[in-house]
Image 1 (cartoon, helix red, strand yellow):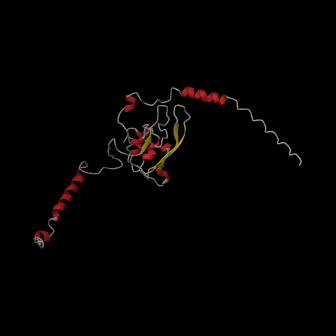
Image 2 (cartoon, one colour):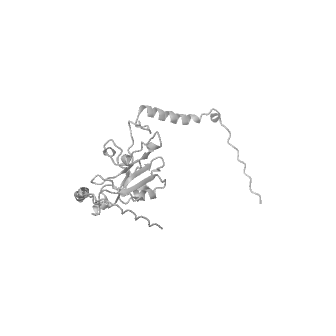
Image 3 (spheres, rainbow, N blue to C red):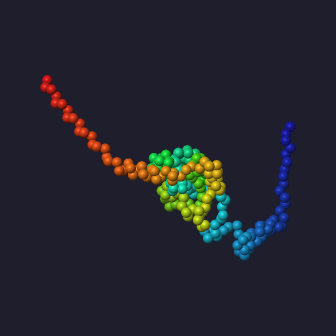
Length: 225
């Protein structure tokens, strides 16, 4: 059975449509918004950047920072968890033996390529030592690709990051006091054994060098055939 054919006829154009009068309603809205923006700054949807800045959420994912312990050393133990979890493969770490016996390893190289980073926060979630946080800093512009690779000097947390005019903390594992610290499971800073470590290093440096090895005996002369 053939389907029913429905023919739709467009409505007849009125004189107002022919004169484009309905456009005046849209133009009136545009003119009303224009006058409101000129006469009142509060009505503007935009801000006067950079003099004015938006207050972003505490979960904003901006520039990364590396947290430090009470003794000033980095909390990072170079476990590669953040580099493994990173979907953009933008984190490069090289591990070394820590000079303080309280810690096993530390990063000799810790680099983040911010041109590849997608600001997902997976590195913050993966870190078992609470060593990497994110800030609200979104002003990231570079002239060369090399400038976009942040190392330990650029990533280490600075007082300006939390100053009144600074970006402040963004995405992080917790807000307020550390849950591990509340439970009494906070990692020791190593300050208690630091004097013992320094004394041990000084004692090792005072030890005399080992005596030189005796010269190897000369090979016996070959017997004539």
